[in-house]
Image (cartoon, rainbow, N blue to C red):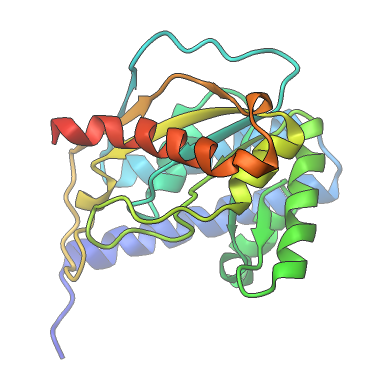
Length: 241
C-alpha cells in the first residue's frame, strides 16, 4: 500500500477539523434560532478557512456587467469539477447562497446535519417522486431570498469536460420564474488532481459569470431551449483553455 504524503494528511486533517468545528457551530446557532445572516456568516467563514488551508485565491470575472434583479429568485448554474467548487462559490457569489446537493452528502456525520439545518437542499436522484418534493422545497427557500447553486450535470466531471445536463434544474427555474446566472469554474480540478494524493497549493481559481438569463421567457415545453442556452453560456470560457 502506497504511503500517503505528509502534506496530504496534514491538509485533510485540518480540513476535517475546520468542517467539524463550523458544522457544530452551525448546529448550535440553528438550535438557538439565530438570525439567518449569522448562519450565512458561519458558512462563509468555513469556506474561506478551507481555501486558506491550501492557499487558494478566487478571481471572479464578469464576462459582462452582471446586475441581478431584486426580489427575483436567483439560480446559479455551473460546471462541476471538484468538491472545492463548494467553498469557492460560497466565497465568490453574492447574497445568501446555498447548494442543491445529492442526498449522500447529507449522510456525512455532523457536516450533513449542519447543511440540513442551514437551508442546503438534498436531492434524491434515484427517486423521481422524492426529487420533485425536493425541488418544491428548493422553491420555498428561494421565496425566502435564498439563492441556489445547482450543477446541472448532476455530478462531478472527472475529465474536465462539460457533460450532459439533467432537466430538473430547468423545470425549477421556469416554474419559479428565476433568473439563471451561468457560471464557469476553472482550476478547482487542479487543486487535487484525479488519482493523485498531491495537493497543489498557491493556485488561483477563476469563476466566470455569464449574462443572466430570464427563465420567465421560457415554458416547460421549450425547456430544452433554455437548457441549451445555459450550456452554451457555460461552455463559452472553455474556448480559452
